[in-house]
Image 1 (cartoon, rainbow, N blue to C red):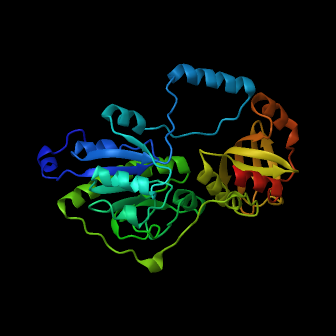
Image 2 (image 1 turned 30 degrees about the horizontal axis):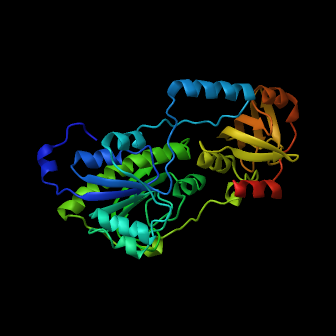
Length: 359
């Protein structure tokens, strides 16, 4: 957003009272709304978790303990661009805890707020009719895909896993049917070839902030023009399950790398070799002619890296750990526990599925 708004244009926009339901921290939506004069009466989440406030000293202590205990560290490549918690504190905007937004108590509370509009983005509860009908102008939801494609709770994971090249965001009128309301606005986002889920989600969050603000301004001025979704083109993907993250070495190296990207930076990709769990923290696909190996076979090895045959091409594993060992212990064990010619198991054991499903 430009730091210099057109004040004449801003003054023509009727001011709305808005309730936000969102779990996103790295999101400057509230600041954008306030710049146009809209009032955020409250911000609701099922639970609020305060980020650490001890600053660099605590970070240094934690990093030292992590190194001493040889704890693993994921490949985190996204840095927050905005802190909603601090901004809400600064603006003295109430934070509401809402374990059940469809309860009569919460509905009565919202009625008392006399809001014009509710805005929803990344909120893990389904709003029912009573709440949907409470605001004067209804409820707008922002969904991180180009509806009607990729409806459902984890679209970013599914888009990257499926190798899509285009993602996006959709603002639509919220109805009781999930992600099925009339579309208000959309924006395409190209997915980078090496972009992971965290990086894409951050771009989606900040694009959503700008697009939502424009849509709300249009709504305030009565110029919004919602259009029905083409239901015949609808695709829906449910919650991610343990079976959806299984590494299949018979697939292509590109497909396996896509799965790794879809999990990062939140968790590693898990593989097994002779029953031993291997956590993969960084990987890249490589093309090349088949060299006589079988899918899952370690074809080459250098310090800290593995080259593994897949059903098509090779997966270069650049960072990995052998569970339950970490840090310098891992670097020693990597020298002889995964020899060239050994083969990764074709699927995790039933125990691994159970533990992942429970996590």
